[in-house]
Length: 61
Image 1 (spheres, rainbow, N blue to C red):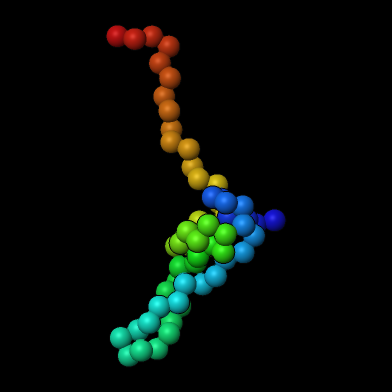
Image 2: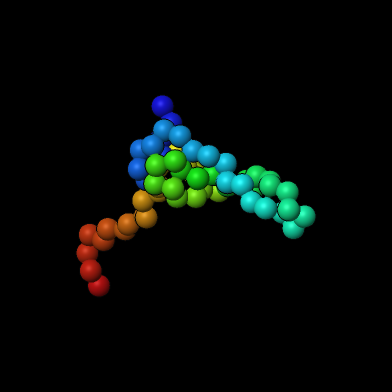
């Protein structure tokens, strides 16, 4: 089941903006219905955040 990677909500809405001529249009972004965060794609909404790469050194110097 797909859910928000930040809050676990199971739904999102398309973000609607107003064009210069006054028309309401989808912006191509998505807003989580739980935490209200805005995502640039549906995949970004559900896909877990990548952890930064860490490097371990066995010796110093």
